[in-house]
Length: 247
Image (tube, rainbow, N blue to C red; front, side, top):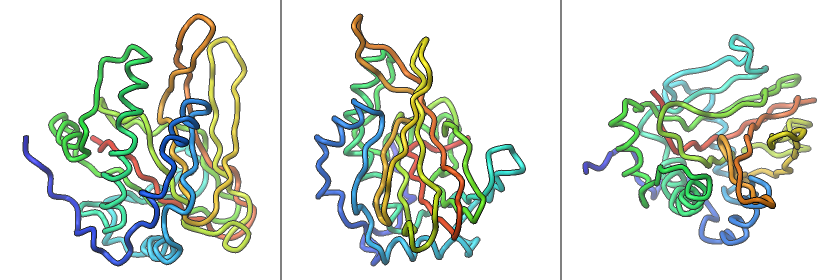
């Protein structure tokens, strides 16, 4: 199976901070319990600021989306093009390697036959063989009054069931409001909402589409959506790391 050569060297000076320091067993427990988990201080502040500053340079991106034009909310985002900037090229496969066992266990629990390879490069080959060749990591920008409606990031047949959002701005200094929101819809029950507090450089890993929940009669699927509440002041940048590519 051919390997893809989309990454720039991981010796980029904007390298990530704390993947190896994360308590991954706790992350797994949090994901199983609530469908999301915080990865504290994943990215260094200088890296956060440098990535946010790249929003104004279109040479890094393949497309720009203005949310209001599509009914997605208010604000905008840009999809990176290949090759990805160094920090993202490093983060994507390393995070995938920590999450793939959880993804495979979840699918087995939900009776889904799909299993994911150990290495992210091999999963991208699967995506690209199916025509999903466009990179999905994205940079989001919100200004005062902007928000992101509840949604799911599904881009084709091959979907990795977990994704990561990294806050690049500092709450209270760069912006007010703009909280990450996650909702869970269980069968025959009202939706449950959760607000996830984040600081600059923190990440949240969460279910893309659905996750298994243990009930009194066995496991069942719950439907997940995520979004961002209205920004009350300032400007907020977020890096979205999605592991499957798009058609």
